[in-house]
Amino acid sequence: MLAYEWGRQGTELPASVLELAGKDLADRAEVQSLGDHYEERLEAAGFFFPATKAPAMKTNLRNMWGRLGLTRAEVQTFHGMLRQIAFALKRQGGDGAATDEGRSRCRKPLILHGRKSGSCPDSALCGPAAMG
Image (cartoon, rainbow, N blue to C red; front, side, top):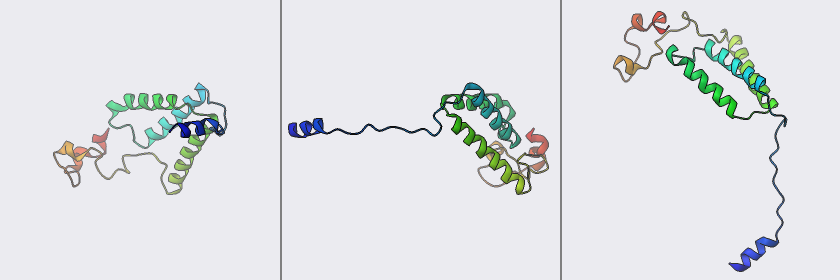
């Protein structure tokens, strides 16, 4: 074992370097803009449901973006990904926004209806007006 350790001491290993694409870290305004962009698109898609939980969900997303330590290139990549998703949805005949007319079923978990599987038992109760 001693010989093994001596052998390790004499071997020079090159230091590994983590390369970042675009080494400049994004400033606060750039990260804020990214958060605004995601919030806007997620809002349009109906992600913030139920409305009572929306403020906490938005805060969680903002905190996540702030902790990531993104570079400017990464921020631009995220913006581009979101624009491409919106473009693809629009090309498929939708604008990416969740509308009452486009909803065909209840978005509430079936457990709220006392059921484990199947479809919504009461479309009048859980229709677009009830999804608020």
